[in-house]
Amino acid sequence: MNCTEARHLVHAYHDAELGLNQTLEIEQHLAACPGCSAAYDSLRTLQSALRDDALYFKAPTALQRRIRTALHKQDQAPAEWFVRTWWQIPASMALASVLTLTLTVLLVRAPEADLTDEVVASHVRSLQYDHLTDVPSSNLHQVKPWFNGKLDYSPPVQDFAEQGFTLQGGRLDYFAKRQVAALAYRHKEHPINVLLWPAEKAAQTHTERLTRDGYHVVHWVQQGMNYWVISELNTDDLQRFIALLQGAS
Amino acid sequence: MSEKDNLARFEDMVMPHMQAAYNLARWLVRNDHDAEDMVQESSLRAFRFFDSFRGVDARAWLLTIVRNTCYTWLRQNRTHKDMLSFDDALYHSDTEDGAGVARISGAAADNPESRLLQHADRRLLQQALEELPVEFREVIVLRELEGLSYKQITAITQVPLGTVMSRLARARKRLQGCLAAGETRT
Image 1: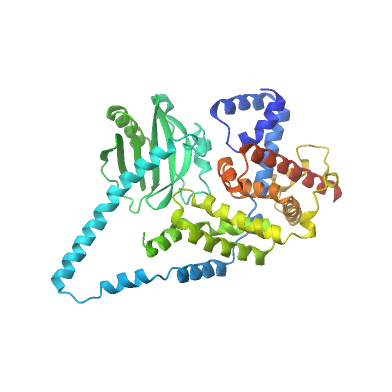
Image 2: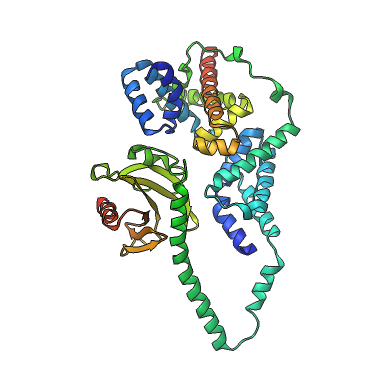
């Protein structure tokens, strides 16, 4: 890589937007070229200055309240009123209890099945061209800080390249009604997605294993984090990966 | 999906990004009052279209609506100031890489003088950013202040990746030039 190329690509490198090969190439160039290295430092300094708190305009608190009120007004639909009223129709205590119980059971069961479907859909979507990562880097020191400011938690990120499970990068995903961190790994040619977000209770749970649409889905809670792992990888190799995730922290 | 679920889902997915919406609007229209109007209008519009939103990136989706709303407003309310093209000659700098920037965020001593200095530089940077042409300003805000990816920025601005990258490089160069020029003037 020459200086012309490097000066052109230094912006994308600074923004963690280069693919692996180009990242390695430019890093080699920067290590040997003080001029281009200074250009890179300049970008970092500029970014640091732009991230000054005073440059980020905060919305007045009244604004969010006003918007909420306006949305609630828009939201008053006749159908909702009907649903509320229906529950108030007099019925025998027994009937009401049975209905409540059935509804509760349905509500309790549905989310679990929903989540498995959701994780499969999320995995499949991520495999589309260019959807896998927002930050394509095998360097956990680039991937982990990338989530700062984008999520209200810092996901633990590990690389298991030595054991054959290479970190490909990270991305933001939406899962179980919230923004979550997604980490993409690869074992040989098989992609693996790991979704993780803070658990409500800090307790460990046992590991649940399911299969859906040909994918293996594994989930558990560990050290205050929900983990959902999905891959087409065979169960033996996948289990080795799970063991690494569960052991490493 | 019932209306009630829709609002709850909107509150969960979209409302957390109101701050980002306001910051972008404020940088685009450059005053508090109109920025608030833009955010309010965008939020209502977003809610109306929320049924059709099946994506995962609610922030980028909301910011696209905010950006479009602001651009419509800018077209209708263009001031003389906006019409002026950016005068490169005023901000020509010999050092391509902006020596002036280093002063702002280097390891500064924490004494009254250096704090005054930092304050002055911050205002210089704010002014420089405010005076960038809007298409350069928005990529800086989206990339540096909001931390969005190139992919997200192309989705929000609806311009090709190459254009985003070149605008970003040029905007950065202009900011660095402004700051260097500011340093030599003061």
